[in-house]
Image (cartoon, rainbow, N blue to C red; front, side, top):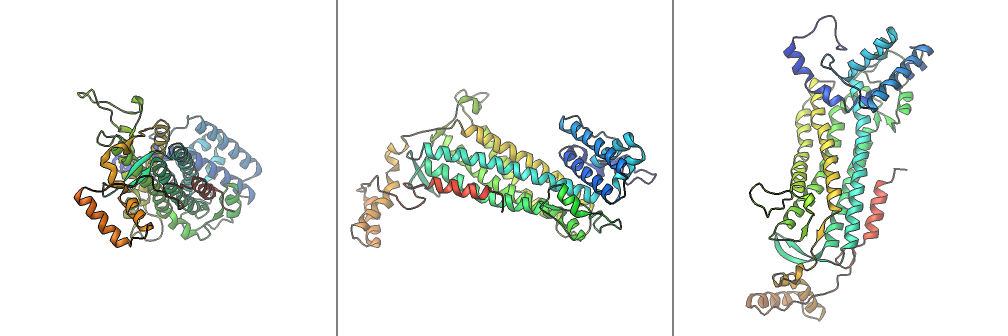
Length: 430
């Protein structure tokens, strides 16, 4: 069944090419298409395009389909082009001519727009919740291990003293920036496009304020052309926020892969969270974090792919836009799985507490030793030259245990302030 069927059908190759994998992807959106159809039916009844009985019948059958979807029993067979055609078919099968009226005053264009934006509102909120859970875990680990020393690196060269507390809380605070972007993307999606129809509105006296309130949107996309132009822009905005989370998570995964290697040996995990080798019995491979790293690298490409797909498209709908679902929906699901695995695995991370006992890390304290001489009255440039000379001739003697007291430093992690900042970032806008 095709909603645009005028009595003739394309050949099989055309059908396969144009439908693509819409049926599979639409299963993620059916819930939201049904929600929008329910609000649309109620609106049609409100303005008199449906009788009270027709409205009640449609709402009842849509509610039954929502129950089927929630139970995982809703399917889109090969005979249907997408979720829209399957839903209309089922309503017509149950209600006859009343079912045929559900498409009044709307188009597949605004149907998919509203379903996608409802999905993104939920998906971005879900991702934000998972980010908050990962943040909480990182902050707990920072509190637990705040005094455990860790070498800090620049250029992958030993640089300055750090700690596990500083490292864990660095990633925690970085996630706050990502929450800002997730919230911004959610607000872009939180604008009702339903009623824009094919992108130019309708001659029916529809009530868009009613559907905006019924669907829980903060506002509507008032201009109907702007609503249609949101297709692609909404997806790119969401993908940019997802990519920001992926960048933070991918960097954390890379650190863990590095720190798990025998050359570093800073952290480890139980055997159940690592994998072995088919020929090397000693191996404990960080496959979880390698896959997180790889998946997150690919996720960071999605905004660029969406940009390439939608750049130079004029206003109005174009079938190219169908392909945005192929890029965005799997990206959302992949990021969710990466966040879940990171949160679970970090709950069992084991940190090594004697790392800095190795004399190769003595040079970590060169800056602290230099700063001590400055505090004693030696000009900085003179102290720097003296320190460089001592390192060169082997007479350097590190000053360990220097106090780092300023906000955000090794000795003053400000974990409570970081927690407050995240709480504020996650608070609903007033």
